[in-house]
Amino acid sequence: MVTQGTEKINTYLIAQQRIKHAVEQLGLSLDVYERLKTPHRFLETAIPVEMDNGTIKIFLGYRSQHNPVLGPYKGGIRFHPDVDANEVKALSIWMTFKCAVAHVPFGGAKGAVQCNPREMSTRELERLSRQYIREMAPILGPTKDIPAPDVNTNAQVMAWMADEYCNIQQYNDFGVITGKPLEVGGCVGRETATGRGLMYAVREAAYVKGLTLKNASVALQGFGNVGSNAARFLAQQGCKIVGVTDIMGGVYNPEGINVELLIKYCRESGSVKDFPGCSPLSNKELFALECDIIMPTAVENQITAEVARTIRAKIIGEGANGPTTPAADEILKEKDIFVVPDILANCGGVIVSYFEWVQNNYCYYWSKEEIEARLEQKMVEAFHQIYDYQCLQCNSKTTMREAAFMYALKRLYDSMRVRGWL
Image (tube, rainbow, N blue to C red; front, side, top):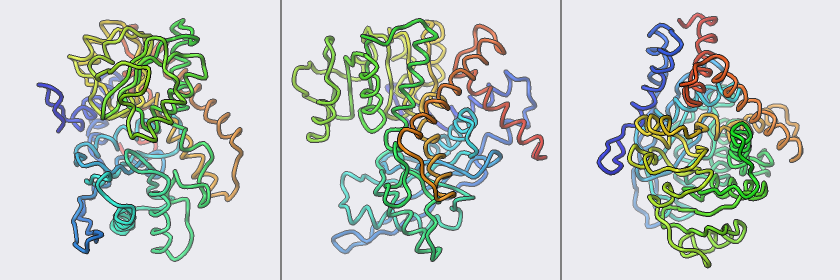
C-alpha cells in the first residue's frame, strides 16, 4: 500500500481495475477478468545473506508470474526497501499487457527483494543476488521465466544472477536473464533501450498532436537510467529540458539544462540537486510547470488527482510503471492532456530484452545499428497500432491508456480462447 498525501493507493487493485474496465469496454465475459486478475504463481521466500560483519540477515524476496499465454514469463527484479507483494503482483500484470502491446512473445512477471542497496557493500549485494537466484531457480529458465534489471539493479547484478543459475544447471545458459553485460551475452543498446523507446513514443505523440519537438519544453520526474537517457535522446531531437527532479531534490532552468553536464554531475554527486545555473525545484512544482511534455520516470502513483489538477503540459510520457492513478486519469482526460501510457511508452526495455534473448538462443549477435533500427521500428508500430485502434475502433472519449489495455486484452483473450483456457 502506498500513501500519497491523503490518498491511499493499492497498486495491485489499480491493475485489477484496469483489466476489469477493459473487459467491460470490449463486452467480454467476466471469466476473462477472473482469469487475468491474479498471477498464475506467486512465490515469497526468506533469503538469508551473510553480511560483511559475519551476521546473517534475512531479506524478503518475491517472484510473481502472471500469465504465460503468449510465451515464457518475463520481468525485471528490483531491490527496494519499500517493495511489497501487492506492488510485485501489479507490476507482473502490467508486464503481461506491455508484452502484448509490444508484440513480443512473453508473459508478464516481476521479482523483487526488500532491501536498501545504498546501505549494502558490493560483496553483500552479490551474495544477495546469488541467493535470490538459488531460491528462485526451480521456476526460472530461458523457456520458463526470464528476469531482467529493474529499480536498483543493473547489468552487474544480472551477471551474478546468470552465473549462479549456470552454476546450478552445470552448463552455460545465458538466455535465462537479459540486461547482462556484453561479456556474457548482453545486447548492445539494452541499457539505454527504455529511455530510447520512450523518446520514440513521445516523438510519435508529438507528431500526431501537431507539436514540433524542436525547442519543445520537457520536464522529467526521475533521473535514473530511464529518465537520463530519455532526456539525452529528446535533447538530441531538439527538445529543451527545463526541469528535472530525483529523490534528493530538483533543478529548473526555463532557458534549458545541458543534459550531458547534468548526467555527469549526477554521477559524481549522486543527485541532480544543486546543479549549477539552476534554481531549486520540487516534485509538486515540476508537475505544475507550464511546459509541453512531462515525463514521470520514477515509481508508481506519482500523478494523483491532486497533482493532475495542476498539470499544464500537452503530453505526458510515462517512463515509470503505473505513475498515474485512475482518479488522476479522469482529470487528465477532462483536461484533454494526451497521455502515452506506461505499457506503451516504456516497452523499449522489454523489446530489446527480447532481442537479447533471441540472440542468446541463436548464439548470433546483431550490431548496435541493427538493434536501434529494430527498436525504432517496433516502438513506432506499437504506438500507431494503439493510436489507430483508439481512433478507428473506439469512441472519441477513449484514452490512449484505455485503448492500449483493450488492444492488449484482445490479444490475450484470443490466445487464451484458441488454447482452450476459457
